[in-house]
Image (cartoon, rainbow, N blue to C red; front, side, top):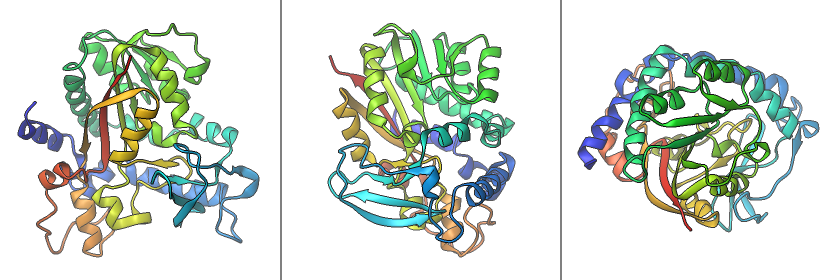
Length: 337
């Protein structure tokens, strides 16, 4: 697809751009989800005396890409320290929640499931998924596809409609029930514990998954085994170099140390894939967050403001995406033989 055509489609599924920040967040229930999440973090994970993550619920770690422990503290948000590795520049949270705490946190969460199954959200997501599948299909033929962290299964549903043979991996009980109702096989355990033949899939996708994982290199190495020769890997992650993140810092919704513990930019996302045997074919950004940024710069609530005030000329989707300043990165990579 030509750049102008791509930009037009990307703008069409950019909810913040289509509806405005306030209306989009209210229409999809994100405003309710954020309140639920903030209440849960304050009440469950933080020590009220120190403002830090409770030591009985947490564990230490080094940089998940290079394993160095030499780092710079960027900020603390909701008790979670966010660092940048001095060696490879990855931004990551340390300490993090213990495995069993985090697993239960995901397993029983209904709040974000309600966002992802909202009618407005599904409408926009289906446009995005078809857009990305068009690009995937330019690199590999339609065949078997594995979606890891499938959520409620909107992507595998769209892929199935296009002729793909989808399989899903998802832990959340509300989501697995919906996926299975679609007649799609769904595993509710980690990928390394599932009995799947090597080189089974033409494509594997990670939609907003890698930022959640304690050891992202481990899952990428498992994916390498499961992909067919020249199979395609799609990864979507929040972009730590997005304009929204650069301007708002810890006030940006990207940062949430209970679930988001790794923060990639273009270089670190390419680097971690290269270390695990993948060649990045192309990388782009999606979601401009124009109205969110404008609200913030005009001293309004970034996500619930009415976008009233001075208009900034640099806040346009073309400039943002040409300079990799969109809210999320999407990479398309191939398994090297």
